[in-house]
Length: 127
Image 1 (cartoon, rainbow, N blue to C red):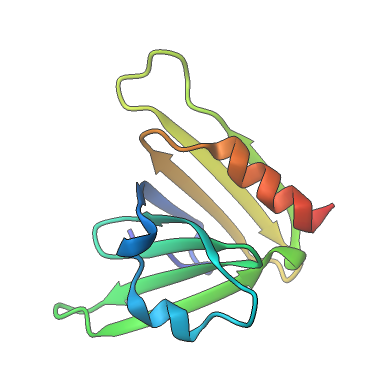
Image 2 (cartoon, rainbow, N blue to C red):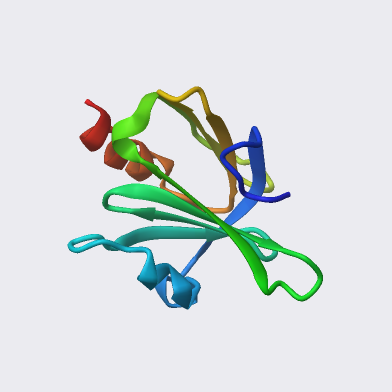
C-alpha cells in the first residue's frame, strides 16, 4: 500500500537504516533538519526527521515517478500509539495522526519498533 497522507493508512512498515533512505530526501531537508527514523514498505518510505514526517510514494512500474508528502509535527492536532502485544508472532505497533488541516494518517509498523520513541518525539513538537 502506498504511503500517502491523503489515504488513511499504510501497512507493514519495516525499520530501515539511515543509509537506506532515498538520496533525494536530502534535497528536501532544511537547515538543521536531520532524519531520525526511517521505515519502508516494498518500495515506499516514511522518514521521521527532527522537524516533520516525509513520505515517499514510489509510483509506476519503473519507480521513476515519486510523490513526496511532508507534514510538520507542529500541524499534528492529535495522535495515538498502540504498542505491540506480548508474545505476538509478528509484533506490530500503530501510530494514528490527525492534522489540523483534516488529514489523518494511520501507520502500522512491523517488527521491533520503538513506538514510544516516536510518540515522545511527536510530543516534543505538539505539546
